[in-house]
Length: 318
Image (tube, rainbow, N blue to C red; front, side, top):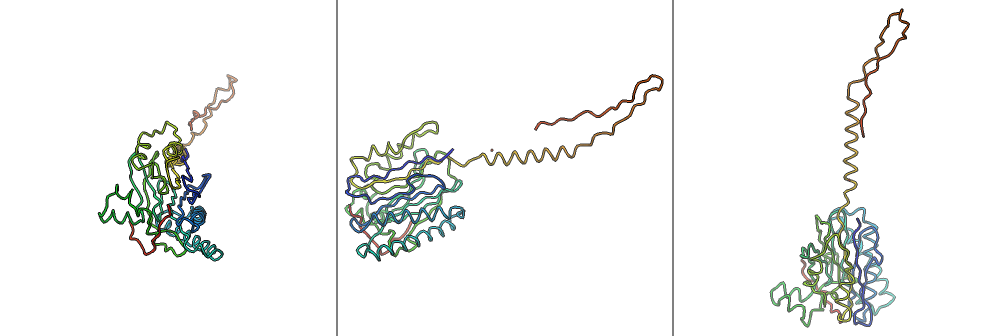
């Protein structure tokens, strides 16, 4: 079985699309990136596009080397270096884009583990049977207020400064600004969602939990269509997502390995069996005229699957 991938990359009620996703046509390896450009007219769409390209290409090229969180962290560092290099080149040619920046969510699946990276207020979720097992922590002003118990989660959703983020990808971003996490022991049927904040305008966490609660491995649901129906025509911001329904780790190779061991063991056991007894010649009386015969032994047969905000704060134009 293969992972099921559902994609949205919609303009909403905006005049331009500053969200970016990669890959547009998912394949192998299982790497996914969703970014949200920051700054309105400050080339946010350029920053988000360069971010998805830099992180997706680097994570794919180094996929084979990623075995644990430290190796994933190293790869994220290489991705960031590539991003800041190409962004600085762009700013050299377009000085007015010096404040261009973007949020980041990135996911890499390896065996039963999911490696996550994020920066800004775009989110990553892990759902199992309709329950949220993991949610990334926003790098935003309202999240800091919630953490300090100055406002509630409900108040944060409608706070006048909800668009102020405390971290983002820009030409001087430090690798420490990108938060990392590893989800271990994924199970078949789990959902991983990368989304920009616009998606959550209408499709709230409660709605998402309900959508994934009644999922069944035997049914086929177009989750992109379901979520788009909720958002389309009602969402002011751009809204984008990469939704992955995890198929589980393939067991075929394990059974082939066990079968090979069984066959080798069986062959070894056969070789250790006692050898065939020597043929015995039975003499018959000469006067009978009967020829000699040989008595052979019987023939034997065998039958052989959460961070502290830095000084770089930005407001996303809404």
